Each structure stands twice: as C-alpha cells, then as structure tokens.
Length: 130
Image (cartoon, rainbow, N blue to C red):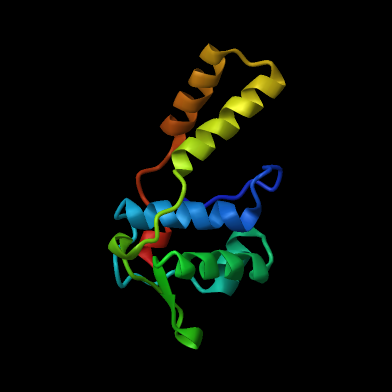
C-alpha cells in the first residue's frame, strides 16, 4: 500500500496519513468519486487506532478533498476543491535535512538516501484501486 506511517516520526500519525492521501488526490492517483478505505480497514492495515484514521479523514474533509457520507463511506471530491495548505514537499525536505543533521549525515549521503527512497516507490496505489 502506498500509504505508510512511521511511528518514530516527529510528525503525528494522523498527519502522515492526511498528507499522503492528500498528495494522492492532488496528483490524480485518487480520482473524484473514488471511495477511500473504511476507517476500520485502513486502521487495521496501518496498525493504528481508528480514531487516528478518523482524525485524518476529518482533516481531509476540512481541506475540501473528501466528503464523508457517514455509514456510506468517504469519497474523493477532487483537487480543485482543496483548501491550500503549506507545501508538504518542503516540510518533508525540512524533516529530512533535520534528521540528516542530527545523525551527522553529509549532504551527499542525504541526497543518496532520498534518491534511494524515490527509487523504492511503486507507481501504483492500493488506495486508488478501492
């Protein structure tokens, strides 16, 4: 699955989920009308509490990216309705730079780690198939 959480990250788990699903919507990998996994199912898949996923879905709804239909699930509305947010890529780059500095990695090693991480990404999304 393309949505992954890192419990050791300083970024709260609900925010990790919100940011990743938001990027899937904005990039078009999740199209308008697509259903997101049920809160219970995604929580089980990610091994997190249901309340954590619910908080992420609520934030996505406030951002205008999804609509929650109660017992009928959560559907993607589309990126054109999104409320602007701070640049997630810049935030991620800042986090990588901080970790690199804290662990004593030089810039070349940090770049190599990022290149390797990009190479490990899979072009498909399990969420997009739901």
